[in-house]
Every structure is written in structure tokens, then in C-alpha cells.
Amino acid sequence: MLILDWQLAGASGPEVMHWAREKILPKLPVLFITSHSSEDDIIDALAAGADEYMIKPIRRSELVARVQALLRRAYPSQNAAERIQFGRYVFETRSAQLTLDGTPIALTHKEFNLALLFFRNLGRPLSRVTILESVWSGNSEIPSRSMDTHVSRVRSKLQLHPENGFRLAPVYSYGYCLEQVSA
Image (cartoon, rainbow, N blue to C red; front, side, top):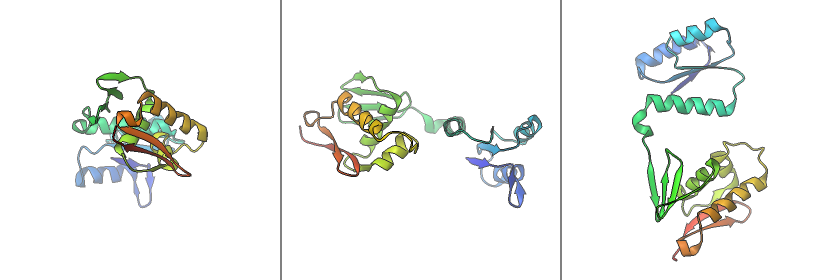
């Protein structure tokens, strides 16, 4: 994916976009992010081949959503439902559903992402900063206790206890670690 501003050092955004489409990939998704906000500028960029156009200042969540939408459209085969199984836990990443022994577990979006992060990093301690960047998109304004509350809810809802083969434990002055243990 290519993210461009209208004005670049030594060239214009549309020129770089045309070059990239000729030399790299003709179907490369292109997003213009610029302070040019007139209707004519937007029409010119889209007519030149841009797939999306955003006007500064950019809202982080909107940018992430637009990038994800462009990537889904550009590479549909890579966006198929992904089913990941860890013992008795099955994650359906496309629908953000989690089951334990076939029984759905009701999770919020953040709880699902947090649980998936822990399972994908099984046995590896994750720092609070890593968790913050992965689940909260680096939003450093969330209260520290909010993360702890989410971790506690994930531990409880997923029954992450040794008798179920997993333990979600705090790592003193660092973060958390999901460990696989013998029942």
C-alpha cells in the first residue's frame, strides 16, 4: 500500500502514484493524506487513480479503518477467515469469535484482541507497552488500571487456570505472560 501527500520533495503525489503503479504493482492501493481540501483536489486525486483520500488533520482510528478497508479490497485472498486453535480454544479472527470446547465466549473487541495477543505469544512475557501498542493502538492516555481490568476479565472469561492447561500470570514490573501448564 502507498500512502502519499499531495506535495512531496521533488515530485507531486500523483506523479509518484503513477510511477509506483507502472513500476511496482498496477493494483497497488493508494491513499492520499493531504491538507488540500477543495472538492477539485479530491476529484483530481481520485481521477488520477487514488483509491482513498483523507484531509489533515487525520484521526488515528479513521486512518486505521480506511487502511484496513483498502487492504481488504486489494488483497481479498489474504483476508479470508482465519481459524486458530490453541488446545480447547478456537479463535475465528475474521468474526472476532472465540470458543472454548465449542462453546462461544462473550468478549468485547478489546478482550478478544487481548486474548489473541496472549495466545499468539504463548510462553513469552509481554510488556505493558507492547500490550498497549497492540491492543490500544499505542494510546498512552488509557489508565494503567484499565489494562489490568481487561486482563482480569480475559483471565476470568477464558478460565485461564492450570486445570484448563493455561495460566495468565503477571510478570512483576513488566507485564503479563500466558503460559501453557500441565492440568
